[in-house]
Length: 450
Image (cartoon, rainbow, N blue to C red; front, side, top):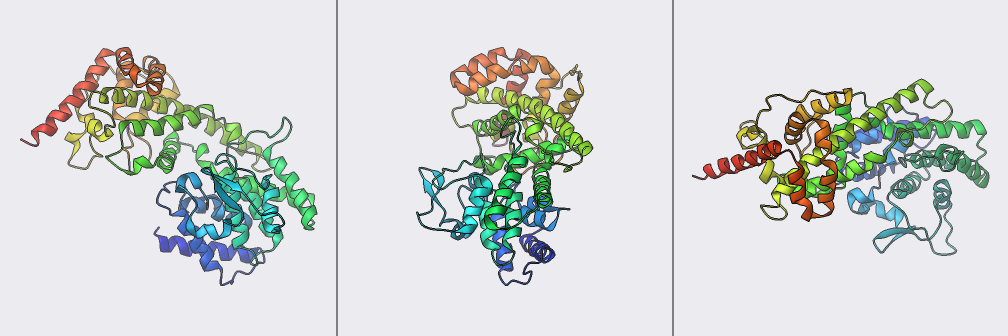
């Protein structure tokens, strides 16, 4: 779908949802609001948080959920390397940059009920420094939504939309031993209702929080993918959003690629399903909620094993690349991203065939071996979907022996002087197979100049 199609769909969803809520669906402001959303979601670094994502998050939801989904990722500072200029006019009266961070700052005596409502809903305060990992982007996105739709929808509906956006702050556990973030949101809605005279009933507040949970769960819905290959494909689309070096296809370094994998592996290592998906009252139904958590657990376990195998393989390549000098492009060792008639220039064609390949011992090992050999479910612009070096290492060594290289790899990542120790710890047959493969690839390149 191109930008014009995205824009048309966004405007249509806005109009239909606003009409369903009794708002001004024919407001002349709406085309500009739709353009603002699509422009923000198609920034240079966006590869996962795109227009397709916001449509997916809103799919099947109530009008309130659909509107919240359209706005929820509008601001994504660490992805966009700042705030989109078109959004700045909504935000500059309320935030300023201070020592590289964003701080909520409103002059004393200035009163703005919409801004104060958002502060209360998120539990923030004037003068607070915002954290990219604790609601910064969601707060600013909600504030833009409230300001952009002011006069088009009632305050009551704007509060509900902002509440749904607040719920998309991801990966939160209990806020207290006996209180979830959803229960906290219900309490804040109750206080806002009383302060602004909105007269929300308990049932109405519960409905808003259930809608918010529905949006939040769809936002991270890929964690419940039935197929780990799909989950990892989505993960691979996320990686370049905060690792901008990967945009330089065939130029990014071995270390740059490893850093991106290392950050993702570190994040997923400690994540638990209880911090991914939420349940409030009957949303979602208990049987569905259990299935989401079960799928999430499987995806996390498979992803950890997969990422660790790739980290070890890239660690070996990085240690070998030190012989070529610093900042070696990964393509120098692996070959450029393959084309139909260019397979001979790929490292994978020069790796030895394993005579007695390792046989998987567990269902997770079976899944990971398939992912390494056949690949994730979709290609990405910066990487092949399969993993030939990790695949070769697993077939030759098996998981137990390969995972024994994880700590030496991490030691090397912390201290480059540990490179020789990592190579010494590797199976000499495996190391020779990879080294000779790289050597043969370089020889073939040299021959092409003869």
